[in-house]
Every structure is written in structure tokens, then in C-alpha cells.
Length: 227
Image (tube, rainbow, N blue to C red; front, side):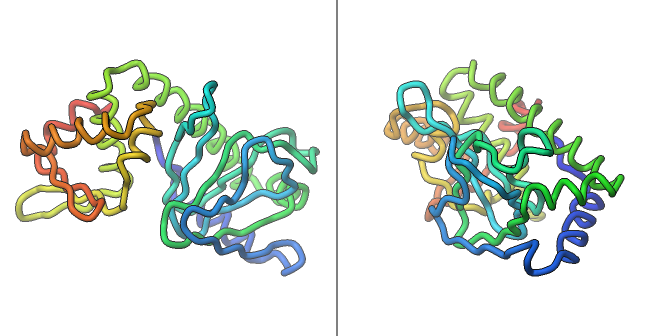
């Protein structure tokens, strides 16, 4: 999924920071707390300032289905028409870092900003395009085998959280990820199935697991999952 260029995000944050305290509120949440819940009515737009969140929804059998991570500043929730002051949220947004900080801006106030600012207008269009592309990508890899789904997930995590060791070329996925979380992203209902797949990758010397951090030892192996 292509990132939105920093110039647009920086401009968004700059314009929101100019709002009065009545028009914006800073919200700080701890790990596992929900920012929004699927189908709940919401009258605000949330903008991530710092932290990591997971977007998810309930599957047809009531299971949790993770859609995507977000670990960079930008719009978290913005759906429906601009003149709708109260809208249903399409998915859950849960904090997955120790803490996460957001701006909360009234929807109608936010859209007034967008409509008078060409850069923000372009940013919103890119935001919608990004969300569509993310859903398409997820549908593509969900048709793969369980092993390939885990491999594709780890490759995406390399891109999101990867820190490269310039001496040996190994990449640390610098974000704690449980096997349950991997299963929820990959549509694998059994955590033990994820554990078996991860243990096999360890035995093949492709990865190493320490304190819920994943070290990618053979980067080239995972590059085959690039889309």
C-alpha cells in the first residue's frame, strides 16, 4: 500500500493545530483501548498523531478480522458524505502500541477545512484511494495458503516496522506482534496453527522470535511476497 506523501500529512497537522481548543481535542489512549467501534455512531474525525492502531471488524462467524495497521500520522476515520454530521463507523480501531495520541475534530468543522484548502482536498482523495487499495490487497492475499498468508503478512510488517541491520542485512520487525494478531490478519482461526507456521520458519532459519519481536534473517525469502 502506497504511503501518502509527508507534505500532505504535515499540512493536515498544521491546519488542525490552528483550530481553537473548542474545535479540536487531543485524545490519548493506552494499548488495547478502542478509539472507535464498528457500527457505532460518531460525529468526529480522528487523526493519528503518534502510535500504532489496528483496523478490524467482525467476520461472519463472529471472529475478529484484522484489516490493516496504521503507524504513521494521518486520518484514521473519514467516511460518508461531507454534510453528514453523524455516521456509522465501518470498523473497530484499537490501539496496538503502548499509547497512541489523536486529534478529534468535529466532522463538519473538518470538511469546512477541506473544502477551502486544495492540498487537504487532494489528501482526502488520496486517503480514500489508499483505503480502497488496502482492501484490494487484503482480498488478494487472503486467497493464498496459510503459510503464504503468514509470509505476506510478515513482508508487509517489514515495510511498516522494519529496522535493518546494515552489517548483516537482517531486519527486525520493531513492533510486538502476537500469534493471535497474526492469525486475525491472515484469517487463521487457530493460534496454534500460526505457532506451527512460525516455528517452521524458525527451524528453516528464516526468522527468529524474541519477546514477541520477529527478526527476519533471510530477507530475500520474504521479498517473493512483494506485490
